[in-house]
Length: 463
Image (tube, rainbow, N blue to C red; front, side, top):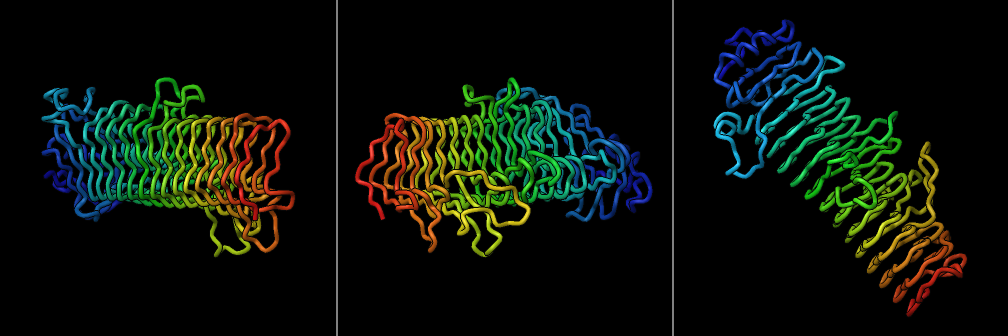
C-alpha cells in the first residue's frame, strides 16, 4: 500500500499534491492509498499499466476526495490489451501486470471547466466500486479497445457532460449496476461510434440527465450511425430512468445506421424499468431485434415510445400511463410506429390523460393523431391490448399493409366523449385485418376508413 501522505501529499486541499501522487505512483507498490482528506491535483495522473504493473486507487471508505484543478482527466489509465476476453488470447504481460485496474471508495471533484474524472484506453477488467464523481465534464470515459468493464455502486452526479461515456470504443462485456447516475447534462450513459457487445445496465437509478437549453440529451443514449459502429447484445433491466423535459430529449434512445442496415443497433432487452418524463421516453431509430417488456412508461411529452425505420421489435406487457395525481398538470401518452415492419404490440395498456391533451404550462403543443399510430408500416400485429381514452382516435393506421388488430379493447372511459373513432384507417393499404375487438363508438363512428384502405373487418363488438 502506497500511502500518498508518505510521499509528501498534504491532503488539506490548499497545496498542490500532484508531485506527491506521481512520486507514490512511480516508487510505490501500485496501490495508491488516499487517507481521509482533500487532495488537490493540477494535471492528469497518467498510469502506463505496462510499465507500472497492477494498479488500484483506494480512498479509505469514501473519506478521501481528489480535486482536479486542471484540464483533462484526473487519471488516465493506459493498457495494451488488444485481444478478446478469451483466456487463451491474453498476452502474458497483460494478465500478469495489467488485469483489473481498480478504483474504489473515493471522490473526484472538478474545479476546472475542462476537468474530467477517468479516461481509460486498452484496459482489461477495469473496475469501479463506491466512487463519487461530480462537477466534471465526463465521469468515466473509455476510448479505443477495452474488455470487461465493471461499474458498481457508484455515484456519478452533476457533471457537465456524460456520466459514463463509451467514446469510439471496441468493448465487450460491460456491466453498470447498482449505481446512481444523475444530473449529467448531455447523458447519463452515452455510447458513440463504438462496437459494443454484452452490455448490461441493471438496477440503477438513472435520472435527470438533461440540459434544458440543448438538444438531444438523454439518460441513456446509444448512437451507432458512424461507419464501423454497432451496438448489439445488451440489456437495460430493473432501472428507474426519469428526467425532465429537454428539447429533443429521451430517457432511452438507440439509433442505428439506417432503415436498411438496422441490424447495427439491437438485440436488446429493455425490461422491468420505470421510465418517464422526457420528450420521448423510449426512442428506437433504425433498430432490429429489441424487446420492450414489463415496463411502466409514463408522461412522454411527445411519445412514450417512438419507432422509426425499425424491424423485429416486440412491445409486450407494458403500462403506458400518466400520473392522475398531477390533476390539471397532465401530459398525454402515446406510441408511434413509422416506416417499420415485423413488429408486435401485445398485452399492453395505453391510457391517455383525461384532458386528451397537454395541460402542463409551457409544454410544446401535442402533434398527435391517435394514442397508437401505425404509419407507413408493414406486418404489424396488435393483440390483447387496452387502448383507453385516445384523442382524436384510439388507433390510427395510415398507408400500411398486413396490419392485424385483434382481441384489443379500444374504449373511452371519460364522461365527456373526446374520441372521434376507436380506429381510423387512412390512405391506402392492403391485406389488413381488424377483428374480434371491443370498440367504443366515438363522435364519428367506431371505425372510419378511407376508400383506398383495404381491410377485413370481422366480429368486432361496438359499445
